Image 1 (cartoon, rainbow, N blue to C red):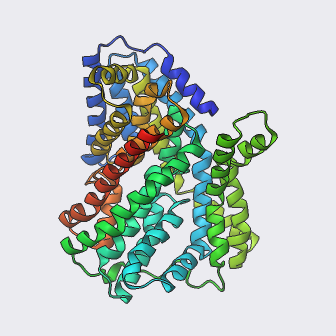
Image 2: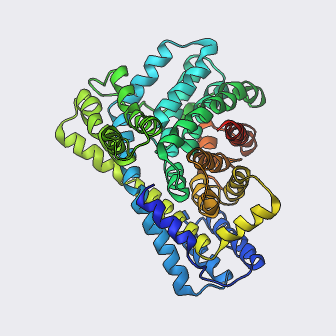
Image 3: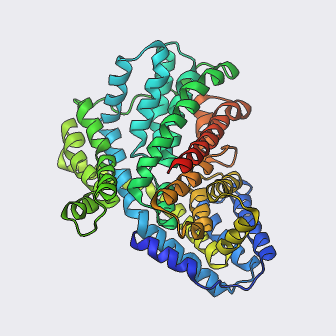
Length: 465
């Protein structure tokens, strides 16, 4: 368990900062979420400011002293950024190296050269899943959708038949697989084992992405049959490079942090002795920080230098990769502050009491809470962070595999039915040149399928683990 997990669980055990009853707490939660939704959707306020104001409103409606509410929010923000901020930065650097070096294009071109006809949707899933591992969802969309449009136009494929599998691959990686910010924060909040969560996440992700991607795309292509919009097909990002890294070394670099974390998970399961020398080594190299840092350092040589980058160009690439994530860090941090405020006013205990009275399985309850917050706020990351804070008390006494499944249940719920309050909704709509209705029939339905199928497989795994 990380130090952040210990701090969060310690905070969970603290006395609530308000004496409000369950009814008032329930109203406070709804009011706090409503404030966030209205500020984001109606007034177009930045999510960081909306989450900050929503947290203060949450405390006020719950009858908590303002000073205590501010302390809860700032504590949660600080702990969350401390826990995942460096990881987000390292992921951004790796993603930028992958894009600027032409490594992403190399993966795309190699796979597409070997795929055609009915195999193309499966190739798009593979491309999106591999590239989506180190990239934020929005970055993955910007990188992959131009490729999707090019493939659809040049190969005369249905846009939805090619696009839906790619979007499914990106979305599943974003919601279920660390080191993406949402899953990482949920892992910290409930005290789950990262390696076990990653391993089980892959087990859930593979069938889920198949059903929501290649299988659903057949129906999406019938419902919405549109050509690739000409004005949205830009020049590919790696054009103009004299050379670019090879396919094998690019894939190896992208997969390095995942492999290191999986090795740690396997050693933890097989050896299960904290004093064992091998386990001590794998605990270090398999930690998210070291695994991503190793991938970034290796990527500077296998991606950057292989593409002919000078030391100055590498430095510039790293610098440019960090500026865009300031907003992401603030939103994730504010989401952590909102989550901690929820915990400190006693909502976690209220949820725990309700779950005992309703006899709802913890995994299903976690999914339902994440679904509700996702529908309300439009943010998968905010839904994951907030739901993890609410259900953290349920993790006490759970086994390692059960806490990992709890994280995956939250992640699956956070992807439910993207609609007009989600930035991803508008990105997909504009890139594909669809109407709001067409976007709902394709993208929104796909997200819902991922969520429902994901929780289905999580529940199935819970029966055998």
